[in-house]
Image (cartoon, rainbow, N blue to C red):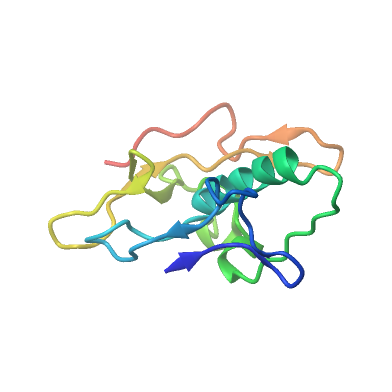
Length: 142
């Protein structure tokens, strides 16, 4: 997979001499670089913005993305109705991917490893937060 930025007027985004670029060559799949995550996209955009600030500070720049997974990205512990039980539960937690060195860790079966963690805080209309666990997260499931 190649991820890069291009302009109809200026071509591929790079420094005037071509020594700096936001170009990313990514080998997708569990046996290569994993998958291009939202964190990878953010890192690439930061690099692109650094190039633009350094070499093209007087131009106006607009980034346009068409990547469905970035549209609704939330932290893995963000409250989501699909992860909530219908009634009271002492085992109310969510499964999230195990991340090691910035990449998803895979088990011997080739599937992403998961860990169970408490769901994050909810935010009320007035901006205050509320735990879904009363006075703290529940005990780990047995």
